[in-house]
Length: 502
Ligand code: CO
Image 1: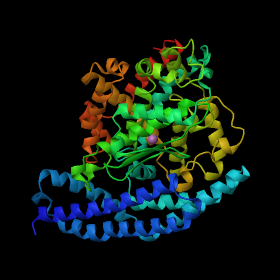
Image 2 (image 1 turned 90 degrees about the vertical axis):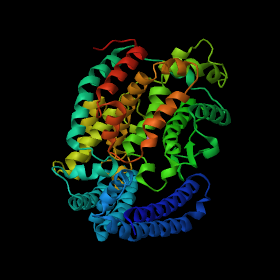
Image 3 (image 1 turned 30 degrees about the horizontal axis):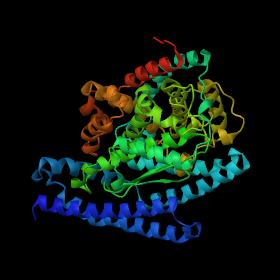
Image 4 (image 1 turned 60 degrees about the horizontal axis):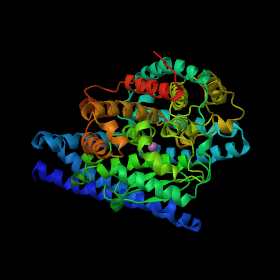
């Protein structure tokens, strides 16, 4: 068999593995949106069975084909070679971690999640500490198995954000801290923005209908997706031709529903924009968690929280409210939805203080993996950093070190992808504006098609064939540069608060 024939077989097997992933995604969607609570035990069985089959398919059947192609790469076409390299990167990483360790980590994560819940109930970190210590030990073993140059944390970053390193993130965050701290301080001293006029009761059905109009304008295809309501909003793709979003609605806070929808809509456009013709190959997969998050955030923040956006949508938006937002303007809504308030909870943070939440988590994770701090010290370190970065006192661990579920899953290295998403979003927006100088005028007219197509052509269609930073290089001519985010933040919040920062 020629190398290209073997590669075609491999593509078919990978497509089957992707089919199984899609079927599991559908079960997950159902579990969050539709399933009666009594179905959970059977569902857990089904998920476990399918993931076992999927794992075997990849490791055994794909593994055999991958091994038989090794050493014959030069017989493949250039396109096949690029895909093959990406497949091998994933396969090698998986093979490096012994199955016994994988199982032990899964087991420990179940225990840690339970302990985290107990600790939350008791309001006491001590209940979580032993389980987290155990998990951390295993994660260090995993890092050793995966290999790294200098920092065990890098091995875990690679899982979510290929090519990212703690050293580079440290540079990014130092710059953000240096440049944005004075901005935050100036905001603190400026007259506060009024957002109370948005706290009126609006029927959920009307909120959902409004968000569906916005989603349709963004280019989200309802023929290949749907929107439902769930406790935590999410996007899930059963392949590019069926990508579903969920949102949540609060009766007296329309913006919750609107921005959840736009955020998930951005994720969904990425999934709908992946090239179906390469289904199963890395060419049809998303580049990284950080790039995925850039697509949700560019729509939510750079578009959805822009003045241009509100200049178009204001008239329709005001119709939702009992008092029709009498006396208010697009500018008032723009300022209200960009109000900056340092808070204790990451998920409730505004666009600016959000990154200080991530910064402190990144610093703690990095120190933990490097043995510079002990698990037992986390509450104290957490509280000190919140005081330093956000100026707030943490009254109890529920709104402090116990607020996020990530560490109980053993997901060290995930948090930075949220900030990377914003940083990439600003850089992409900057580049898109260069390529399409009329973007803001289009947004003011409610036209989003050109921007959407730019993202599709430059990012969605590129798949997972290069590292996120190399993708940024090919799209924008440079690796990730945080300057774009800093410039964007200074300009935008300067307008919102009527202040000028050099
Ligand atoms: Co997201």
